[in-house]
Length: 520
Image 1 (cartoon, rainbow, N blue to C red):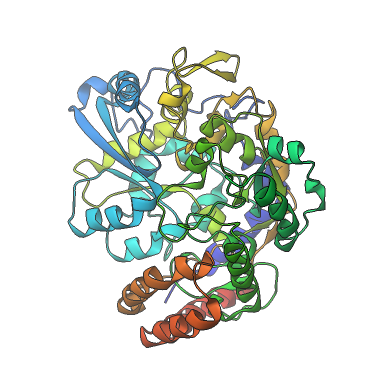
Image 2: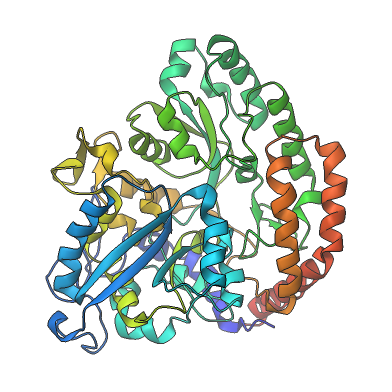
């Protein structure tokens, strides 16, 4: 059973406190963001090791050389080795370490990471999130408890990161990963090619619901037959359901973030899920969705690079369309439309994190690296965008692309460290980070904010369900199969794998969480 007492109420209090909501987008004392990204916190670009904690790291020269492996979700880059060399000049000076970047493409991520973890492959830092198996991997023993490491070597993290992130991503009161310093609120919607919409005379202001996209896609299909109206890689409409998956989006059992109902339900049996399955099937049969949506490993961001994608369904934030456009070489050509309200749940506090693998041979050095990614502006911009003067030019904090930008444009800044230290592209709003602050204000907290499901009591069932979900989910959620025929079979397979037991355990833990909030 989870022990949530004072932590449960503190998370909600932190969210509702206006001062802390604002500080979520800038960090603590000495780390207030500017329009272009913000200044580095303690240990930032000072040339001193950013380990923190009673001088525990000492001078870099006193540390033995060590090679760190960072595994994250994103497309491999042509100039990766060049960027690694530039990163290593910083890391050797600060923590006497070098870095081996190991990006894994989106479609291959689950299989490759599961194999890495099962085989106990030596890794130092893993990207993780509530939507890609965070709590399941904690239950497997894949990630270390970071409590002592944060205290000794993570002072830059704890001084710059809003406490709601660390509190809201705990499992059984322990941190097993460090959240990215990013937006707190969530909203879903559509990103689309504004230049194509203008060319075809499409009035995108009329799009208020996903169903409204039908008339838009009909015109795109007719006038641009070689263009994919809606690109999917797996299901996308889930971004619009406003479900709170209660700490791990890969484990069945949800509540609605927009409702006061705290009954944990099987998403596949809810009306809103059925609504979007029907819509996906309709769009698929009309030829709006790419035929390989259930099997492709090409991310939506990379798909835009081909020039034949009109739109995608995305989790939105200020400047999301511009971020995708810049990564795809379409600067200024993408726009976004919000289709949901703004909410905040554990999905956001644990929506992008870096964990230290239990196979790391130097967890202390791994935490020093994560701390630097939260404090060192030069390092984090190298990792996110490449080398100044090669992959971009810089004027203040404004980046302009070069002929070599495509050589290093991973588009995963939201995964790694402190976004508020990032430069912004010349096609983005110069006050991007101020917009993030405003975006966080007024977000509706989910009843499940701060709750993370501990799947250890039902890990056998969770493992069996993962195989069932892998077999059916992408096919039904992309409209590739008839949901009226396949969903009964899918749900029956989930029941046989023990989904009712998992949901009952989720409800039990969630009820205890809610009771602890009332009593504290």
